[in-house]
Length: 136
Figure 1 (cartoon, rainbow, N blue to C red):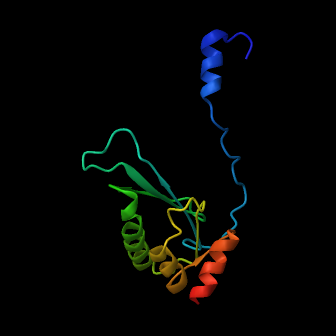
Figure 2: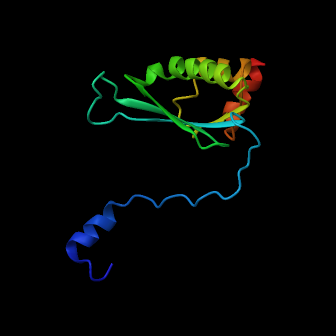
């Protein structure tokens, strides 16, 4: 950081983490085999329609990314459920696995029902796996 002065130290201090390394090998064999989902927000400025949250969905195989905007976190289940129905119909394929960061927003009764009925969630959270097995 030498040579950057006070401004440089300020900017470097604002960097939270570095980017992930590029993945050279695709670990899936077809679209919709594995989806990654995450929820972000609230953002400081709402959209024209009042959305302050976003649901990000990434297909592991194609890296195709969808962002669904939400007025509140409570809308995540409905939006994700509708997305699953729509994309499986369009692609004529089933979603096999969904992976999340287990931040809590996807660990509720409604999402658990999707996991059990339709999709196998790739979970590394032991307590969540126990909850799923109780429902089976």
